[in-house]
Image (tube, rainbow, N blue to C red; front, top):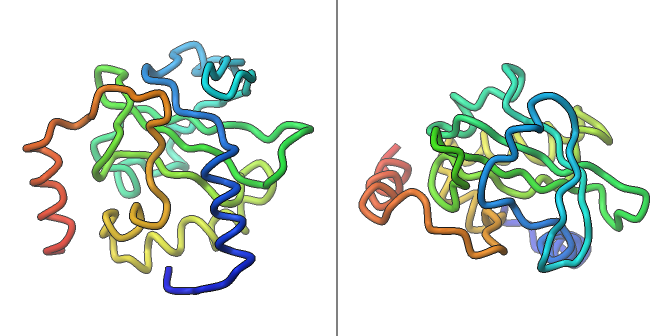
Length: 164
């Protein structure tokens, strides 16, 4: 989080600008198999798969999220990263707060072990303070979905995270 490395900064910039945008509504058909979703901002179709299973431990890493999806690597991917998007019980994108997804620098498809070291361990080192983690890896809301959760809930989550 405090590492000032030119390569890492360039990679993070590339990840944040080239990954697909999170769909505003959870694509429920993803429960059955990977789905193709057209990103109207990037004018490109991306494949997504469900990331809500027991191994994802949403109760720990994305509390308040009921569903998540993760973009899949493609032949023309320029990074090993994946977009991670999470949704509430009404299937609406969580755009901020403790349940919001964040870009994964290393896709689980490429290496679950490296994903753990590069994406999960930094979250753990932040001791669950997602606000610190999100300051470096902000949740995606490139399609300008409605802010979720509402301001009062978000402010309570923020205070809770900082006092943890």
